[in-house]
Image (cartoon, rainbow, N blue to C red; front, side):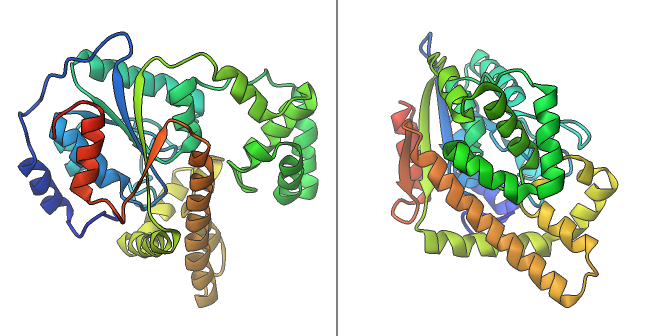
Amino acid sequence: MFRDSALEDRELQQFLQQMVLPERIQIQLPNPRKKVIVIAGPTAVGKTDLSLLVARSIGGEIVSADSMQVYRGMDIGTAKITPSLRETIPHHLLDVRDLHQSFNVVEFWQEATRAIEEIHARGLMPVVVGGTGFYLHALLYGPPNSPPSVPEERRRWERELEEKGGESLYKQLKELDPEYACTITSNDKAKIVRALEIISSTGKKVSEFSKESFLDGQKYNFRCWFLHRPKELLYRRIEQRCDEMIAEGLVNEVKELEQRGLRMNSSASQAIGYRQCLEFLASKQAPDDWDHFVVSFKQASKKYAKRQFTWFRKEPLFRWINREDVSFERCAEVILQDAELSF
């Protein structure tokens, strides 16, 4: 797993243990809006290590906001924290689904909210960490209240998808609802079909439904942070992480998951790294196919980071921290001081 520093897992555990204050601090949280720390940012920016330091420093627990880390076996390609580090700090919403099971934003909101309630009930601080903007938005404001499905409209768009392909439908979606379209890609075929179904059956944009459902107010006092780095530096880190994932056995991981039904899961099979690897495994696996796999994996990862920047620029609750200007320890100190906790 790519790290914010050169520390290996064992060294990182030792470092975290050295940062201990009391073993488990009992935090007196004010009602009715208890505090929740949220750490977001693009892929490879260093969210995981910072969340570990923050949680360890205050005896908190971590809630993952990553749409793919919920799946068992999707470890290397999602940069999932190792089991040994999970023993050090409790984590929630990791490995909660098998590949044959679906997982959506409403389920995330339900399970993340339940985890936060349980952590608060223990007198501890929840630290939410992840980069899936749609999930974090739902956590902050409530899940989207989408209209019921209209089967005939869905079938119409599914037929058009088969005839014209995902790129054609994605182009239509960009014209009809550019705000929502920028949050997905042309590979998110199920989301494209659902969005076009909503638009054609209601005459309203998907983004409009989201705005209506997010007016309810917040249950918690969210203290939100977005980590970032200059793009040229971040892109180098992303390429390095892709190389490390491949070296750690990403291809073998995907081979095993393919046997367990990865291709049948429309969301997991389109995850960055997994989709490109599945395409490589379906090819002749010649040297040119390998080169294409590596290049497309890195390109997709960088494009995803760009979309994350675009998404979080529209999120008013997030304060941005440039990790090139602020040290690892200072980041943790600022976050904890803001939550009125001692470092």
